[in-house]
Length: 288
Image 1 (cartoon, rainbow, N blue to C red):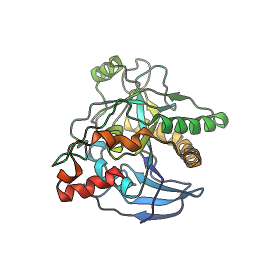
Image 2: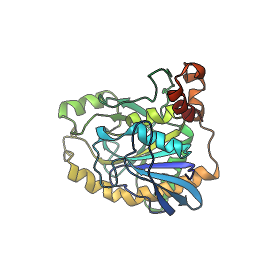
Image 3: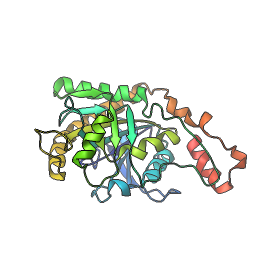
Image 4: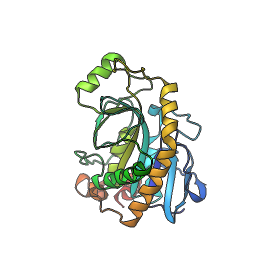
């Protein structure tokens, strides 16, 4: 099983990695079942990379059906230390328009039905999520986007709060107005518990959010529909591919020493020798 330094999780509209060379499918089993689909491993300009379509390559999984624990554990099995997430979002801010891109640095998690930890069943850990994304990795991702925007203009927003809702339905108007009052910048359905689990797996995580709509709060703009979201998302799909390629090169040139890589140093509470044998093997992988 080959090792990959960088993992890419592609969301709606991003089901493959055009720059991936010498690619092969890897199907992994994890203690939490199979990932969303086969993982494609290969190289991007000589850098080992693993790509996974979050919803499956045929987009067959609802946001709440995505096997987040299996996805993150599989990335850990492949040796991934830096994970870039790409996803479609709606805007909750007048200043963030459709076709803009955002590198969020905070989350509000309003999901309700998703397992959100690797721990429990004989092992306790409490990792810090005050800063749920890696600022060093986020800076490189933003740099990659800014490099592209210099030749292919679009607006990038550094920072912002991503509100993750359960879905799969879009917001009611009352909910959309509530989320704006909470100070959220964008809204999506997939970055949680993905970011939580990346931190527990000691993987540096950052997300590029591609704005497709104004949700339903905006009095003068079209209310979000799946057709509208996908239409705008496809306009950003080629940009996402180019940004990913540029970000991979930046990360490989100077891999950042992310605080996420030591998240369990103080977060793991249960002594290893006190953990049941079967669970210990699983936890030892996360500790690497």
